[in-house]
Length: 441
Ligand code: ATP
Ligand code: MG
Image 1 (cartoon, helix red, strand yellow):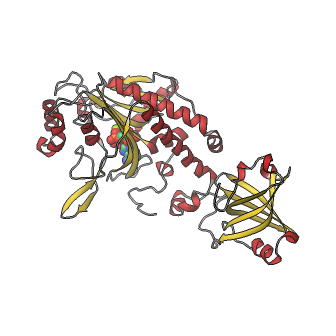
Image 2 (tube, rainbow, N blue to C red):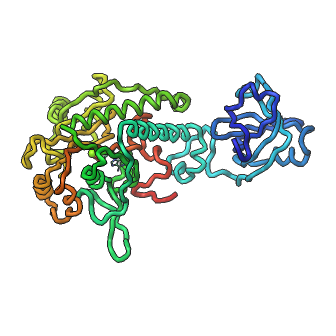
Image 3 (cartoon, rainbow, N blue to C red):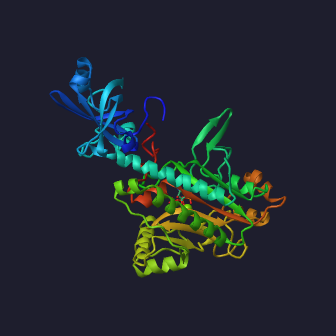
């Protein structure tokens, strides 16, 4: 430890009893009872009790501390004393207290108050909202999710790449992009690293991944869409079919769940969540089978259409009854998938694509596919989608001089965290969300 503190609140063990320690953090509460005052100090690990004895401190300082506004920041040097009554089994008897920053009053919102505040107020005051332990827990878990992804992928021969977020043209056509002024030209913010990670397949780096931000100017305002989101994207070469990609994905997911289960026991119990590490292989349901099941439950989907949010949710309920939290929807109609998805039999007019989604409790968390690697077929599919191959020349070029078969997927991090923890609104799973209405803070 360094700087103002020697210990975090919950790190103090019986070995420190009787010793001098320095702790620092936010004043959560102060109770004055004449010649003694109890101050609850909160740091990133938890809280501890500072028991201030009037006779041991400078009287002016004692008075000042007793009148200190909640959420002010202090550092306390004192003796660590065992105590049955105090939380953590010890209290700190201060010899020196330094006020590092005084909080204003009233606070824009409380930290420990039981009264709830609405999500907008919380997001408007995110720096305070994030002082709550249950809110911090979400981001500690998110951190472990990302740590697990890096660990698994690097351990399995994937190299981390970074594609540009400023792009000259749409990566896929269709989705709305945010336009930005790029000197004299118009450019866009990237919606995904799709074309770049595929381009990497032509380089010899045959397993790549990227964890980055993407931007989508989608107008909708839903509980599961952000306009700026984070994803784990990967691409791998020399696959025989989409099954190879699905295998990597399900093992990655299992590793993430395992890692969170192992490292986030406190956070999970604070949030009242228990997670089940999925057993493999995960269930595969074809698109046709999904449509059929939904029809039996009274929801008709026109063959070829995407499975809408409500139908997706219903399918999730049906699958959950069979004990499947996770399941793949495979063999999508070719028309429902982007131009780069491999047709089932390698023909431009095939009925199905070698494409899949991974669903968790009725919400899509991943889309993936084997991709087309034959440039003629790719041009045909671009044309069939009403796009112009000439607009994709920079991308197509990479397919003309030796491109191995490949496939990959995109896995939204906020979607993972949201569905892993049963959080209703995706905005809770990113620090400073960007949505249709919100661009600040
Ligand atoms: P959806 O159908 O749910 O709108 P999508 O099919 O448009 O998603 P993809 O282009 O397949 O999304 O993106 C890959 C993954 O990135 C998705 O499975 C999801 O986890 C995540 N994702 C996509 N769009 C968003 C968004 N707007 N906000 C948060 N996560 C997203
Ligand atoms: Mg998708």
